[in-house]
Length: 111
Image 1 (cartoon, rainbow, N blue to C red):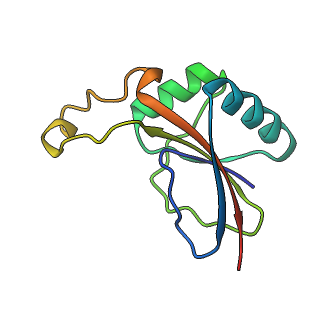
Image 2: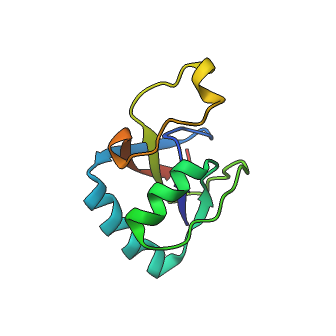
């Protein structure tokens, strides 16, 4: 299954092969994969949702659910390229531009 996530993380024990990609490669590979197999959204922030919808041209559901990985799942992760100070989180003024993000594609394998 394809998992769309707003962070590059390892939520489960296993082997991870992670590659940083351009936004163009992210878009191309994600759209091809989601047509074949669909996707699950684990995008929990409205700013990230908007960035992805603008980039991908599809609707992205918001979800704060925990990600469950299975063998051969692929994670398409968008993450802020910088840390946000705790005092700045309340205003939610970070991540409003696509240039604020990095893109990763990660393949998961169980041990």
